[in-house]
Image 1: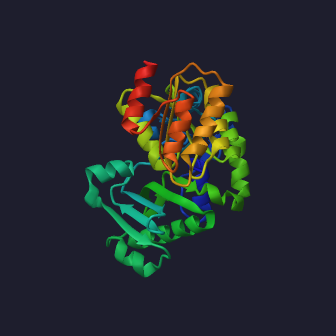
Image 2 (image 1 turned 90 degrees about the vertical axis):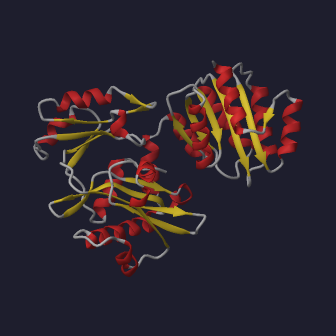
Image 3 (image 1 turned 120 degrees about the vertical axis):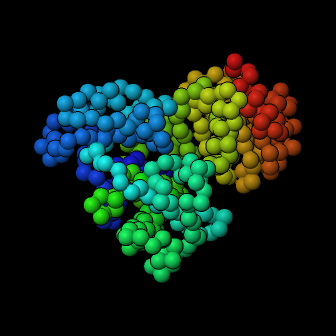
Length: 366
């Protein structure tokens, strides 16, 4: 479960990581009552949506007191990649000096955490890795100690502060069962490090230990997001017309990228995770159909998941709902041959190639 920037910064503040002064609003009328306590020369107005690259999308704007309400109204009336803007974080606009990237991510493959640091913060970390891979430092670490971090961070006047901030991030990771905690950029203001943005993702399997956060997040969900939450799957709304069901973050993102590469636009995606069966695929397809896509693509890699179980869910859905939109299935892995035979009996083709299935769905909806 990913937290909004504001929610992440609230946690940062709790752990004594400095954040900019500001306030959260749900409508422009709330601006006036907050200005007495937040009287700045310029303001950053930031849509609280769960998307990266908000600046490039226009979801972060700048204003002074004279046009702050107008800028806020404009953002509330916009959608970004299918996301409505329900809350805005309004902060003091800060002149950027030294910018760092600092993050911790969980590596299940290595069974450890990876501390990531770059002196070129501000840009997306993937962009930094492409343009300046030598600027990124990584350290696999399970239990951080200051002596490890002393060797890790470069010698500079910021070194002690970077070590302190990293130790606080590790504490957040452990306390909140986070799979990712990121500050980008972490900036220098008058010799203090300040988190200008936040990104925290909590392990969905650990939400039972964080009921306060889970309940708060559920209240913010749309109807379909709430249905997905209770089904134990992840739903994300996008702005295209191809609905996607897949499993695992890597495969989901690869599928979305390939759709985009071949000229299609994903409408949304449903990540059913590992071990999903007939119920998850049937209920997931029902949810996606309600969103009225022009086509549905199912792309499954079956490890713990069984292809025949997924096939049963598909068959049940197709019999119950006489859909007339393009419907493309690709599955590989456990019991895939059984699934292929089952679907063939119902005149449903099951493809082997991910590229082939993406090309097919894009072609059929155009």
